[in-house]
Length: 237
Image (cartoon, rainbow, N blue to C red; front, top):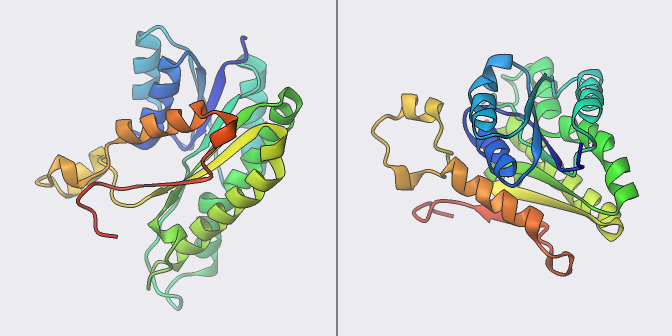
């Protein structure tokens, strides 16, 4: 274990996989955390096929005990993460009177609370070492609560606030915390299935976003970014 460990919570075939691949190419062993094991099979094979190290760990971001167990295993098998990326989320469209309290709570936990659970697992070692990177994947809903989007917006607003609080508390201790607003649809297999005729340039490339995450991690401490918004060139805003 050489200390070059990255943990990605919320790995799927889109952005999570792209981020894992990018940090693996940068020399990191990567903990692949996802609720379903099948979500990480492909990216694990890619990373290991290229000579890297990938550790799949079943993790429920909405369950503090599951998150704690996942990081216990990461520390035991790979070492303390120097980089943590929170990419988990949940979306349920519905009006205030249509959403059940249970579904609202579930979405909030996935979109915000899970990042809090995980941050508590990685921050102590980062502070002790005087360095570390925490990257939180946000959305347009972090800035605007649209009608029928409350189950997403409330959690994403909270995630943005969490990033700001963490950055102000832990930045002076050497930990770079950044929140990334993803403004547009990411080019994923699911989106392709739903909109097969959509042109590439109208969606965000997962690999391009992952490169931006790598650049955030690589920034000099004299010029850290707290918030970055990314969108296709044709996206209105």
